[in-house]
Length: 459
Ligand SMILES: Nc1ncnc2c1ncn2[C@@H]1O[C@H](COP(=O)(O)OP(=O)(O)OP(=O)(O)O)[C@@H](O)[C@H]1O
Image (cartoon, rainbow, N blue to C red):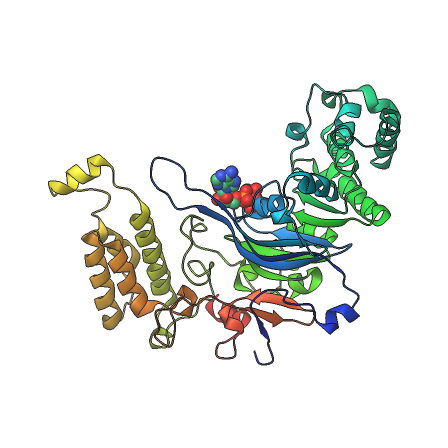
């Protein structure tokens, strides 16, 4: 699409345009990484839960964070309020990098940013009274006098729709919705400006969810709060969020105003995620996009675009543009199988069986090949390469097999430089839509077709 601008981050330096729209940035996240170290008996690589994300959160907004289970939403939320230590990058709150705060400074700063958890049951101590639970952050921060703390707790209980006489009751005497109200009161105790809401209503009955959502919206207005709202339920996100960030395998794939993003998704992953929502209008054209397989293991993310291994709009090399979709599905599946085999550790038993030329689960490439491509119309030049790849993999050299596969069928989406260099190519963030929306996908570049028409053609 012509006219798109490229930026290396979804929110680069703020420009005059944004300032004139009156957006006041509260949190600036720059190339943030949170890795969990390998551990275990083997020297495993780290889990790249958050793998270089950059975006801004504006004062007073609700920014939704959506994506499949395990894509790093909770880790990102926890890192923003320093419950998790960042491995790299910056989190600037009003220009202070909070990832570098320690000791007293970190302790003082913690008042500003709090988190509401999904499961009110596990976040409330059943042996403490409601009063003690809500008062605890005030006690820890030695806030004013004990009498003033008690009064503050009563006011907080009132603010979240509970009563002062609940002060001496215990969590088990309350319903799930009321317990979440208690959690919210505790979160508000120190007057934070920024709250991470991690699936705050997912554990509640549908009838109670709306009440809690309304309460969160009222509190936001009353107390000028800024929310990062982590959620699975896209209809709740559409209702409550001003903007949405879509996350996949530790990366932000698209970020922008909620309605625009829901009505006109740009990134192939956003298309896939939204296509799974049942539509009220059955005449709507686009079918549900089925994603094959599961997201890759975040210890071993693919090179290039994180979504490349499952992307339904993946860029194909020119020579194979006309190749049948089923053959492409087979090639993608073969790539996944090789990646899996590459990182699987052979057991002693497997090694002994291999030694004696016995059948092992690592020596069934012919069967796999037959399963993937048997009965399909594979053109001879592609068949020759695929057969060679299967032979190399049959000799347990998965790395070389993968290289051979990528050399023939790989594209810029896999990080392959079209100019032939060895450098790994990642997508850029492109401006899409009308309102400063950003999408992380090569297809927005002038040289390629946009994702939407490609998805129409392929589905
Ligand atoms: N303490 C930890 N140690 C090691 N790995 C972890 C830890 N916490 C999370 N992970 C891994 O990091 C990745 C991201 O997890 P995270 O909980 O942030 O994802 P999520 O999108 O919030 O998932 P969900 O929606 O299921 O809560 C997952 O692969 C997870 O297994």
